[in-house]
Amino acid sequence: MKNMRSNEQLELAARLSLLGDDTFINVAEFAALTGFSVNSIRQRKVSGLPLPDLRVGRLRWHLGCVRAWMRNR
Image (cartoon, rainbow, N blue to C red; front, top):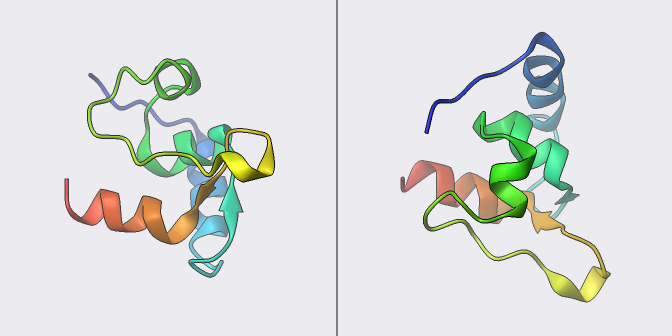
C-alpha cells in the first residue's frame, strides 16, 4: 500500500509530534501520521493496526500506542 501525504497532512503530523502520548487522535490524524488513507484505516486494510479505544464512542487512538506501532513496524 502506497503512502501519500499532502502538505496538510505533513503540517498536521508536525503539530501532533508536539503532543503527549496520552492524547487521543482521530482517524484523520492517524492518517496524517502514517500516510495511509482515512478509508484504509477505517476499513482496517492496513495489517496490524493498533486497536482504537472504543470507550470514547468514536474511532480514537492513544497517540502513544500509534507511535509504538509505527516504531515496531
